[in-house]
Amino acid sequence: DAGVIQSPRHEVTEMGQEVTLRCKPISGHDYLFWYRQTMMRGLELLIYFNNNVPIDDSGMPEDRFSAKMPNASFSTLKIQPSEPRDSAVYFCASTTSGYNEQFFGPGTRLTVL
Amino acid sequence: GQQVMQIPQYQHVQEGEDFTTYCNSSTTLSNIQWYKQRPGGHPVFLIQLVKSGEVKKQKRLTFQFGEAKKNSSLHITATQTTDVGTYFCAGPWGNKLVFGAGTILRVKS
Image (cartoon, rainbow over all chains, first blue to last red; front, side, top):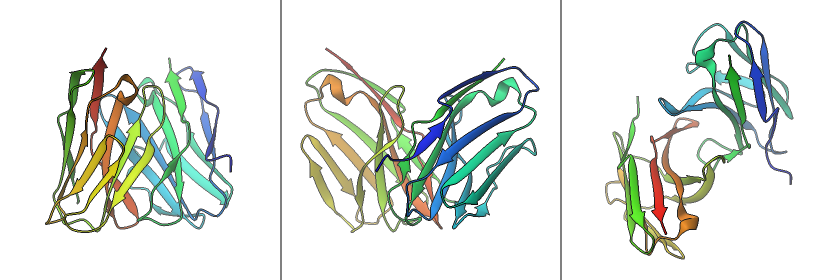
């Protein structure tokens, strides 16, 4: 198995631009999580899906952030418009249940200038 | 909500010295998980502890789960440069994991 796949690996954009991050979970995993990691705030859960349905989006910082999971093999996290404070590493993780180990993707390093 | 606290935040050791990181939860946990993140990498699952008082070993790493299932520790014997990274504990809360802030380990050779 290729593991969790994320793209792009690096993204540099200017303030105000739209950013779309993509994730392909491990096949057969029913849960998908989006995290954001910064030095100041550590690893934060933004949103998670179960069977493609958003379950808890309480960690989404603002309306500028949105996430979708149109099918079991694909999810997107969109930031529109982006701001410099959105600069961080965004991880996607998947698992078979909330109690089991999570498998993280390599992350997308986002820099907003 | 549930909180998971880790100490220390940072530790710098000489190669060959031992290292321990501690994790405390505000609530009783059904299990505790440990992850390692290498610099520039992503968190990678190390182990899950489920039973009260459980102790598990992986080579030089020893993991313990407290009797009350509210605390845990990770001990590394004779650290090596390959041990550098951030070690996170995490406890389930509903269908999600609550991660500690992590302990950054640096090893001087």
